[in-house]
Amino acid sequence: MIKQQARLLDELAAAGRLSEAWRPHFERVPRHEFVPEVAWFGWDNRVISRADEPEAWLDAAYADGPIVTQFDDGKVLPGGVPGLSPSSSLSMPRMVARMLDAAMIVDGVRVLEIGTGSGWSAALLADRLGDANVTSVEIDTTILRAAQRALQQAGYAPTTVAADGTGGYAAHAPYDRVLATCSVYRVPPEWIAQTRPGGYIVTPWRLAMPSGLLVRLQVDEDGTASGPFVCPAWFMVTRNQRRSTEQVPMTGPALHGRTSLRRSEVFESESAQFAVAVLVPNCDQWTESGDAGVTVRLDDLASGSWAAVAYGDESGDDFAVRQGGPRRLWDEVEAAYAWWQDAGRPEYTRFGLTVDGAAQRLWIDEPGTVVANL
Image 1 (cartoon, rainbow, N blue to C red):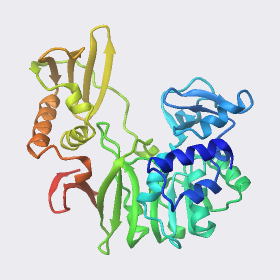
Image 2 (cartoon, rainbow, N blue to C red; image 1 turned 120 degrees about the vertical axis):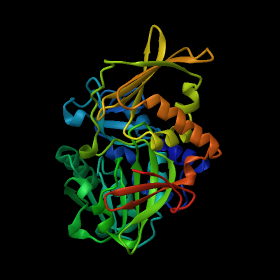
Image 3 (cartoon, rainbow, N blue to C red; image 1 turned 90 degrees about the vertical axis):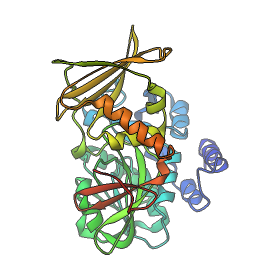
Image 4 (cartoon, rainbow, N blue to C red; image 1 turned 90 degrees about the horizontal axis):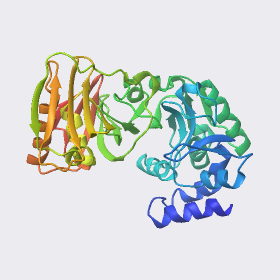
């Protein structure tokens, strides 16, 4: 084991982010063997090249950060100027370890991985469970071929399939675990149908408003699946569930008002933002910065509704609001935030999800206390 790998694993273990059960597998499956020769590293998407800067490339391979391996579904050349949207990556090592723990993997279980990506997670699973117990699907054939080469060179041979992961892979069903490395807005019913009763589905899950969380669902005999949210988890959305990036034009009659609700109170609190995202459905949110400072934008493309809150440097006591369209999106945000406060400011860990066919119900504390039907 090289020094960079040993240092990373020691740091993760010391921080409680790498369990004793998984450490031997992280030792036997070197991450650098699954890092492309040229990729983008870190939150600033800095180019790393094994040929040009071998030490920097190796350091990046064993840093606890993401490595993007593809932008814009492959339209951007590897190592070129980053594109608009990352479309494949190696996740942060701490996140990979957290997801494997959340899946409660035990010897002998059969796992379906949704999103092969680099192949590193598939190799970790194969090292723990054996090749025959791991099936991994990947929608992008270019990404899959690279993963297959890396797996072969590392000495692993799980079943790898070119397929749209939202359909699962029925040929090897049923599975004891389904583990997704991409985010979904709606849990595909195929995943539930292909999981044994009592088995688990672990997937990043999100809403239109930024609010990514990892959820662990246990499949019941009746074909439903239910379980709690585990931790924050920001992952790329599976390709056939991506939302439009089109913006609603701020035209037509507008309602002008003021708000005392600060941006930091809602959009910089993981739990507050999650509650607001649940109660203000189908609402995209982002922040714009300019000479006048920060503006928060909300959009509902389906209804043509929009809202804009001019926060400037957020030094005042109240802030200008404009909103238009049939929905009053900012009024909905304020009502949702008030609900969250009145409910005792619950953390996201008190919430859970039940999936029943095409229906999704979000609950608090126990499945019978439904907060929203999604």
